[in-house]
Image (cartoon, rainbow, N blue to C red; front, side, top):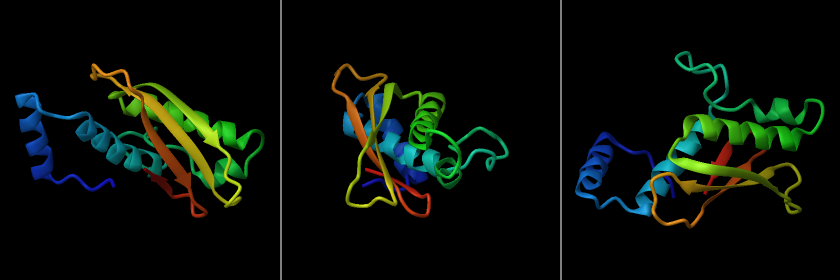
Amino acid sequence: MARDWTLLDRLSTRRREKAGSRTVSDEAASILHHLQRLLNARRGHAAAQMDYGIPDPYEVLHGQGDAIGQMAKAIKASIEKFEPRLTDVQVRYVANTDDVLSLRFQIVGQLAKSKDQAPVVFDTHVGHSGRIKIT
């Protein structure tokens, strides 16, 4: 489960990076934490970076056209721009017959600095309130 990284966590991780002992799971956990913040931020709300985040899911879903496709494109574009540790990003819609009021997407990518070519997969759940949960 993602957790907030404290200053001490970040410093400890940097020490392990310098020693060459940072693991793929450390990197994936850090990316997961950042994606949680990125995808729950709304464009135009961060004064220092106005395009940080994604459009409000409620507005996208109640707009015109292919809302699911637009949401997937917005997620992918945000990840490609603001998460350089993840490359070859693909965002796929996952049909959810259990809860028709929420959306599920699967994010698949490669760790940029990993020698292992195994994909990293994150599942997202866009809830009724527009909040995005990533696992």
